[in-house]
Length: 215
Image 1 (cartoon, rainbow, N blue to C red):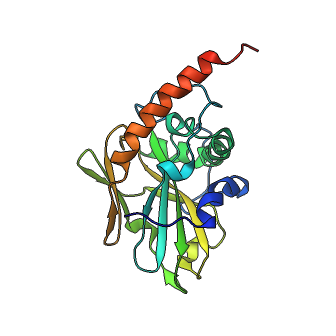
Image 2 (cartoon, one colour; image 1 turned 60 degrees about the horizontal axis):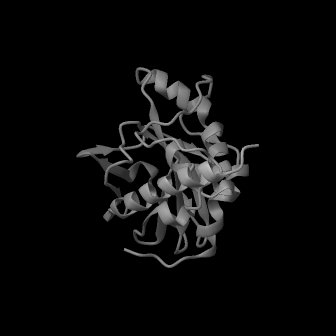
Image 3 (cartoon, rainbow, N blue to C red; image 1 turned 90 degrees about the horizontal axis):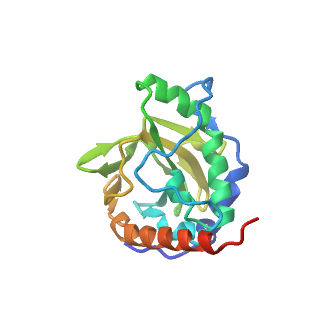
């Protein structure tokens, strides 16, 4: 399913880099840094050219649009420098809460996803915990949701309103393999098309970094 582009899609995630993170799951006390949780190779930052829309997963259940973007370090380094910095800031804003959750789950690494809900119709309700990601034959539901917008906890959207949060999943989600995102009765297997794009950009980033002048 392909969705038409709209202004909120192209600007949302850069703007969110200035938003305060508010967790729905309690106080943030741990200081463990967010780290990459997948097999994605780390390339030097600052050389990527991918746009967020090229790798974001979109779902369109009745009355709203749901957009998902992984925040894994190995992936966001392939984005344009501005997008990388904005999303890296979001990673860091959630690091305390993620460290706390990691300890709760036996020091396991966790996977962060930036998720937004956009109201197409007026007065739409949504339940964040209905979002499911299927990876390597296993269904993953969020273990926590860290709100980025002040009204997220109300779980209601006005028309043309966006509510966003960082969703925390078990780190076993494998971004090197096809996956399926589901919300209510809608699902999207777009990630299988993204994987070749990621591989090409990773090779291009390595080549650009080797050609870059030494400071």
